[in-house]
Length: 288
Ligand code: PTR
Ligand code: PTR
View 1 (tube, rainbow, N blue to C red):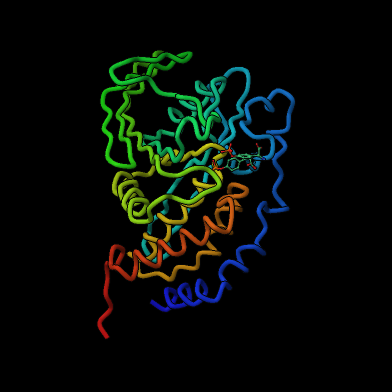
View 2: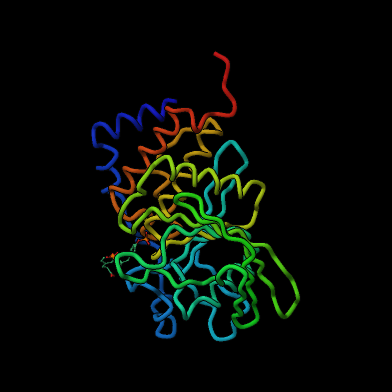
């Protein structure tokens, strides 16, 4: 409750934004050399968005290269025993779709969260890396079958079966897409966004494998979702929420998480509203 007062004050005074503007976008001590190698450059959707070497996802089963523009991001919720694990990544390119599914296979992930549409204002933001409903796509040794697709206001929920042709192993994959959110901008509706984040949280209950989260570059909107989910978990665990510390922790794992001050302000306001309206509340109320 104390930290929520700080949050409200910081929002009202503008101090919160001023602190955010001071924070480094990339940790200056962490290199991103793999992404700059000649053979990897065309696997990056944007030249200025690179994964740190230390936290990058290393592909095991690709013969030519182990590189994909993706980082492990682990967010610990103190006092609760929870660590929310993510893989934060760019929207796949047509040339990296097979790598993307190989990464999901190797990481054991069953949840993919997509925060972009395929095209925004006439520009391609992400390649359609999944088959249309009731269709099948094959990439190298992987087959993907689309079994379900439901649209709910701003969201699309899909179900896939991922099959490893070499081993016969099959896995169910849940795909959740949020459609009301252009890049560099903020979601069109904080309630819908909070509801979407809650849906992601409940889908990952008990999950130890990372949830794969992506937008177009895999930094702006992806960062906002990770901050929102982290804050909601902290509130429930009766822990203080210091958004700047959360951003710092994220940016030490993937550079540039949360693209701009308006996204940061949006998510801080959403956290505060979710708290004051009782959408997110401490599970343990201490007796006074
Ligand atoms: N620096 C950006 C780039 O690498 O392309 C420039 C950019 C401009 C990127 C606009 C995205 C932009 O958004 P949109 O594609 O939705 O207009
Ligand atoms: N070069 C692009 C730019 O600076 O605009 C990279 C970029 C593109 C950065 C999209 C962020 C973007 O948004 P998001 O991470 O939410 O897809």
